[in-house]
Image (cartoon, rainbow, N blue to C red; front, side):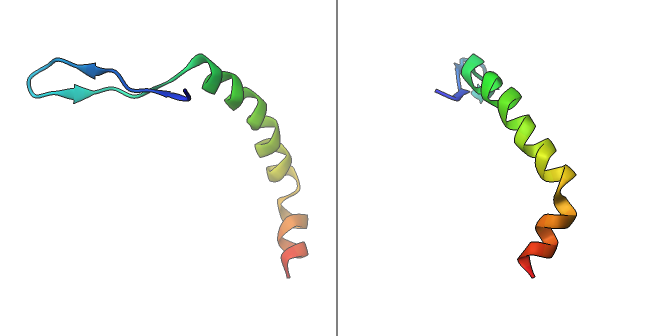
Length: 49
């Protein structure tokens, strides 16, 4: 599970979403891909033309 969605018994009913530990771990890893994309953005855009 990536997103935790506990149903809270409030009136009115409410849901709070949060990332699970595995999702937080994934975000740390994917941040390197995001950083790479930002560093090479100009080359990526030029390559699309």
